[in-house]
Length: 73
Image 1: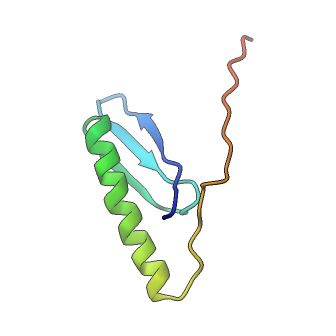
Image 2 (image 1 turned 120 degrees about the vertical axis):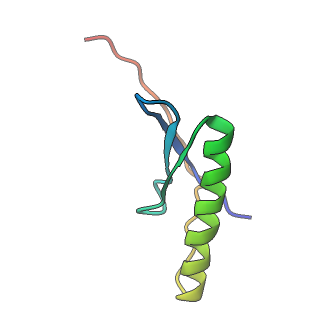
């Protein structure tokens, strides 16, 4: 099992752009959160299959920590 962090960015016209930071260039889009997550799974599977074909190591975010800071300026 591998774990990948995904970031959903809301788009002004609707929907979400999804990026996977540990997989450079792995970006997709979904019309809503559920669709975006399904598309992210498909994009990650495709990306990983190429890494495997090329004999490259698979990144894993299972030990990553993420925090958000809200700051007033």
